[in-house]
Length: 396
Image (cartoon, rainbow, N blue to C red; front, top):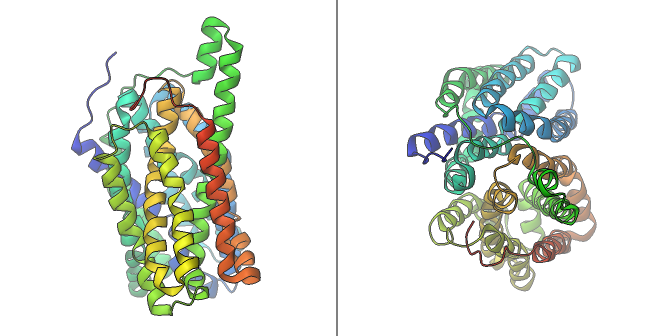
């Protein structure tokens, strides 16, 4: 069956639903952790510990969610994630102690495992097959504003109706906005349920090809683990890092504000100028922007803060898309959901430790801690170089 063409309405609906999902989960603790901890007579450390546990749950559940999407399509799974998110947020709103607090965050982890980008990308791959690159880019363009929208909205709700009301407000947005939007997704899908490597092995017994595919999957998993680590470390510590380089607090905040626009600008470039390139090429280029920005920051100090923030944001924006388009281009739509879950799982788990590990490095080495993330990014570049571009291909 031929893949249908994507429509702006589908991209807008799923992109908006993803914005709600990210804003109400991944970006929630940044605003609500402190008032939540104060009201529950605990510390923000425990709130973030519960959030880290949620990230681990999402990493574990991701491959299962992807396999379900391969078999049944993504619409039902994404609708289910809205219900789970709403239940988790309701648990948080009702919490009077640690039991419901942790229960709520673990439920949120389940929702993240089946309701964030990996699941959305798998749903699009099921519907559009190899033509999913454009809609994947489209939804990341929209959901790239999740923090821009989510943080102020969470803060506004917290100021007006308290953190419990904010949690219930996000639960309502899942039920009455995101869920109906996910219902608009086409229900059919064209992909089969076995991973690409397994399909090749079952058809022609080509064990060497299967081993090669598994090796490429390992490399991609490591590349995306590094990507998640670096992006989470910068999200948690960018102002401190720039201040360690000599920037004032005002400059650090202003530079940090460039990351969002840089991500969107890079995704627009991916959607237009680089759409004819194979995703492997754009991913290789994107891994180099963080080390390049780090070099500028170390060479210039405070005046390099803006360049570093923009280059880091641009690379992160393209690599977010690559998490969806690169496995699709290398393995095809067959079993894409399971492949996506397996490739993305280690990154989800590693990002839970990123704020702590990079914070320790920053305490010990100051601005020189940037060598850690830059070195990891260069390792990711070398891993992507080890993956051969399919012969004769410029685009998938």
